[in-house]
Length: 303
Image (tube, rainbow, N blue to C red):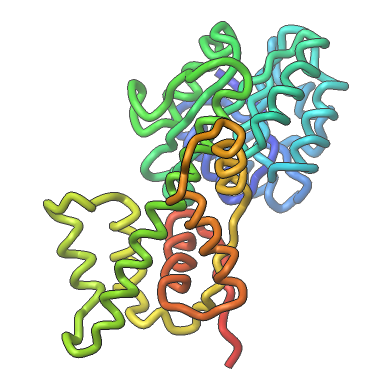
């Protein structure tokens, strides 16, 4: 089938490549002409504007929005609401707040356009490994674009699921990211303790590699930790500044609203906030892990 792709950052560009390789026709648009041309070189059809993107897609259209959460997503979906026709479909693959997604779904429904919210995990490794897709919205709309999800997922029958109505996909992804915060924090703190035990002279990369095989803490995050420590054992040049992109905060707020105790996720968020005014090995390793799985920028130390 064919799909419009709006937003050709690293993940959007990689998703476009995977879809084209899977036999789909992708009409690609981005504010950057260079990004559009790069997508065209990878086999996509270039569109220089939203109007051109609409013209190059046969109705009923399906358009995937892969732009930063917040104002960029709001502006893009509002612009699509003014252009798309009844029966068309919008997929928001970013990390939007689920409450905003519910509101946008209602806005689009007034024009006869369906909204699917697709929480997307996989980071910079999705092109090679496939993406985990958590999808909210009407079942009929999901059925229309099932082949898209099957192509982007690691396998056609796994790694993607329709989890509920509009908003449910982003809600599940929000909680996923909150859990991710806690898992990353535990790994970072454990290795910080190992690093501090100077009398044993522990090789942290070796320990991480050891734990990857047969241990109960083996995981993809541990795989990436081992990779980060192998590349830079002392984490030289990495500032202990750990950003957060919002989902952890939203998870904590939701836990409070629902009277659900979530101390691990809450403290992992607070640790990230504290990192911005302190110096620690665990925070450096958290920053390195975020770079490994998501390509997030590392703040360099000043020499």
